[in-house]
Length: 235
Image (cartoon, rainbow, N blue to C red; front, side):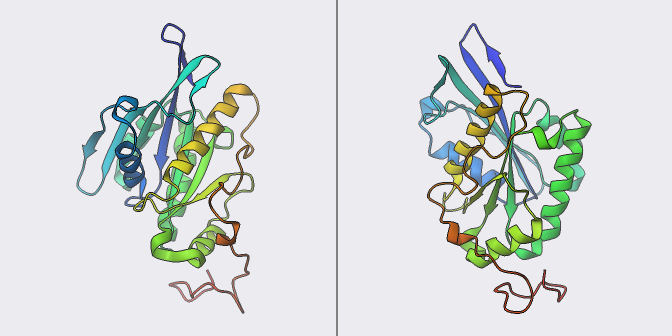
């Protein structure tokens, strides 16, 4: 549950950006920090390793405003995607209020996405959290690289559960970045309102400004718009 500081009249939320290495988590946070007014953000802190940075900073989001006369303060952070950084990922996930899972929609990253999804579930359970009860938004990133059909193909392969809020994005271009943040914060605040009710996709499953036509329905196989998978199968 979010931390409430009654003395400062603040509601504090912790949101973690999770996903495979180099999938766009860092790019999301850098874009948010760069495009937020200095007086509404904390210092962007980076922990560097050989392949990827772990970032975190505090944010007072303008669009969320106040919650029942309490100002909403958000702590945003990423986790390292490398398999070897398991303990760091668990540490970052402690006391998390919401998760953004950033999918790298390049087809060759399918196994990495699946591994990272399983890793997220395992780590949450190790920490005593039930994944299905945690506010979660799935961001399908790198639309600038894979296009509409690539997004649809990855979405189909991952089998995203119905009701989970989904946003199509190009973090590199800043498309869908703030839509993702707003969506996960709305999910977190909905749980504050009803703490005993599991998240059920209270935000629209396709965020306003993202056309539903970006999700063309098609069955892999004959007549499918999906290109052949690397192993020669339809997925």
